Length: 114
View 1 (cartoon, one colour):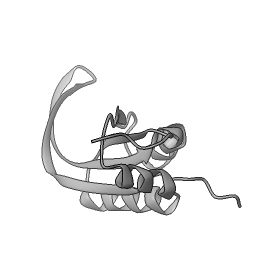
View 2 (spheres, helix red, strand yellow; view 1 turned 135 degrees about the horizontal axis):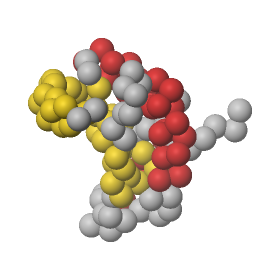
View 3 (cartoon, one colour; view 1 turned 30 degrees about the vertical axis):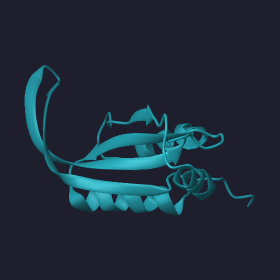
View 4 (cartoon, helix red, strand yellow; view 1 turned 180 degrees about the horizontal axis):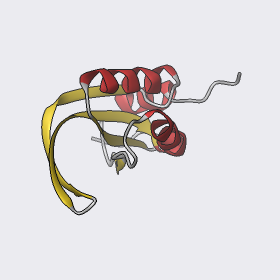
């Protein structure tokens, strides 16, 4: 597989506390052209330390496909919409993929001229 032309695509992982929150966040990111596609997975079981206490919670995982150029705006928007004090926002670069799909991600996440 080869990579598409710039900008580079990335996959962003975001967790939420409910299916409704995940769906709402996914819709906002796609509608605002911050993401080309969002997959919801879950519920999943998350185990983590928060404020020095072990936590185990059911969460929903979003796999967000976006362009690297839209990542700062995506992070800002997630922080505005998310209910967590510190939401999980982890971006992983896409090193290869079907060129037509990567081009589609870039096209879907282009900022409008409005």
